[in-house]
Each structure stands twice: as structure tokens, then as C-alpha cells.
Image (cartoon, rainbow, N blue to C red; front, side, top):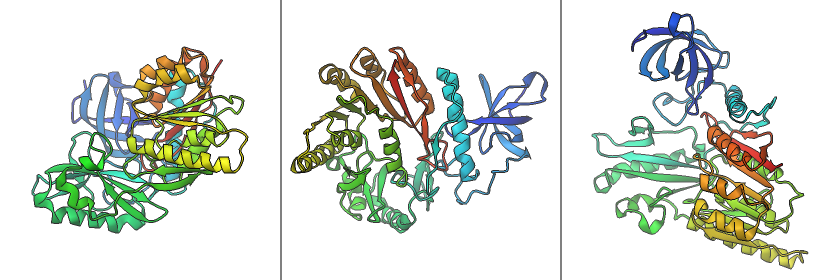
Length: 434
């Protein structure tokens, strides 16, 4: 029987969604094949591991010695790696990071929906560091020393991080200034709060706003942190051109995390939309409304559902401008883009019944497409195709299985590595009704 503190030999064969190695005990008698989660390990490595926690069905451990090292193992370049909860794969050469993630996603699809796919198309980030478009920073001023950085998901404590390599290099001075300003106003600030930092890469401008969520509107920002926000430019909508479509991005609203792959992600998803389905399009969890605008530019009517008021305003404004320009260009068909503010699960059924879309595009949060939406799409005969952008393989497979009940079959997923140095990636998959 194994106890905490025992040493065992473990061979790693996969990683978890958070980047910990998943292995099995070898050569330990009755404990052989027991699953062990070991941080900072790479598939195919064999390690001597100390057991730190015993759970039903698995163990947790930490490396004592690497007996067989993977050739992709490198020294993490960030001095805060291991302490900071933001990155989990910095110890793996970047090219091999993506291979590890692709293998994990492939196994989840094969196991979950019986997909027999030889290879998943995948795309690296042009820049493995400095790619972030936004970050949420936690602040804890209740201790003797301020902690400004990222929240540890296990302890929920803020880990103080003076510098982050995922931020664009030009923004490091702004982040340092933010930390100094918080320290300067410490006595008048709440004990704990969060801030969202938005990086406008094109104009090299840093915006600091209240985080998205229940307090995401400027007029609801607690008065205590207003002096911090006033040290930075007032948030304003930025117009970006993505694949020929102008979209409005507000620092308080949703935006894809990787500056250098944003257009690639949208383009790959747009490619999967079947041109033979020339009817209406419904975009769920619309964000900046790229797909509604992209398809409207081709003369197709679209409805975008999004819960964020600022994002909805921007979709409506950019749509009006685009359609006005199409009129002046004497387009054969004047499309419509309707914008509905609200939760997708509350609005989808009514829109599906009235609008009768041929194509549904969904970019859900990590929790996946709400079950109510799946149940609304399945009986809607007009829907011939669903294109999904998912940041979690497990919920993506779950949603594919839910749609398969109505005859939808998933095609080959494309993996876009929007989150280098972490275990996460975006998955683009199309499903067609058979």
C-alpha cells in the first residue's frame, strides 16, 4: 500500500488540461498502472516521483529525479516559472509544446466520439511570448507586502509577479507603472480587487479597466480604484481589420487572447463554412461579431447574439457602416445584421424558430455550448452546419456528441495554438447534418 512520501517510478504518457503530466506507476507490484499526476513532466519521460496526495482513482506527486529525460526539455526562461500559475509548459521547447497538445486533443476526440483521424492540422503562434491582447491582474493589499499578479487556482491567493513575458515587451513599462501606482494609493484602495489590462498592439497603448463580468461597466467601477484607472488612457473602441472585415474591439469586451493568431483563427473558422449553404447565419457568443459581418459582406443575412452591451453596440455600428459602404458600391443584395443582447441560452431558441438559419457559428466559453442551445439546434431542420471554436477539448467533444444525436457529424478539427506556454489551445471544428 502506498502512502504520502513514498517514492515510485512513473512513466508519463499525456498531460492534463492544466499542463500536469499524466503517468502510470511502473514496476511497483500491485500499484502498477496507478495513475499519477506530476507537474513539469513531458510524455515519454520516466521519473522518480514522491507521492504528495492520495485521491480516489489517482495520486499526485512531484519530481524527485528524471530517469529518462525528453529531448525537448529546456530551462524555463521566466524567473517566476513554477511560482506563477500563468504558464505551465515553459520547460518544453515551443515546437514540442504544440505536438504535446495536439496529441492530447487527438486522444480526447478519438475516445469521446470515436474519431479516427490520422492527423490534426495545427498552427503555431508566430511569437511564443509577448502575444497577449489582455490579462486579468489580481491585487491583494491585505498582507504586509502588496501582491500584484495572478491568482493561483488551487489556493486562490494572488502570486506577486513583477514582470510577465506573455505581455508585449513594449508594455512592461506600463505594467511597472501600474504596480507603482497601486503601491502609491494603497491606503485608499480596497483590500482585494482585480484589473483587466488590454494591450493595443498596433498603437502600443495599454488600457486598464475593470474586469469583464458583473462589474464590467465603467459607471459601476468601485470609486476606490478610480485613481488607478485614471492614470491610463480612457478606454475606447479600437477598429481592427480582420480578413478584410472591420470590427470594433473595446478594452472591456471579449477579444481573442493572441494578437498574432487572431486573424488566423477567424480565417480558419470562416473557411469551414460551406458556401453551398447560402441562407441565414446565427452567431452565438458573438463577441465582436466577426462572422456575422464577414458573411453579411458576402450578402448573407445574420443574427449575432452577445451578452456584452458594449460589444453589441460595436457590432451594430460596424454593421451599419459596412452595409452603407456596400450600398454606395451598388451591391446586388443588401444584407441585414441583427444584434441581440442577452445570454445565448435564453435567446437562441426563439431566434432559431423565427430566423431559420442554415449555419450556426459558436465561440463559447471554456464551459462549452449551453445544453439548452444544443437542445434548440437539434430539432431545427433549417440548420445544416455548425462551426464551433472551442478552447477546451473535453467540452468540445461533449458538444459534438450532443449535436450528433440529431445527425451532425464532426469533420477534422483544426488546432490553433492561441496560448503558447500553457496547455490550452483553440479548436475549430465543423459539424454537418447527415
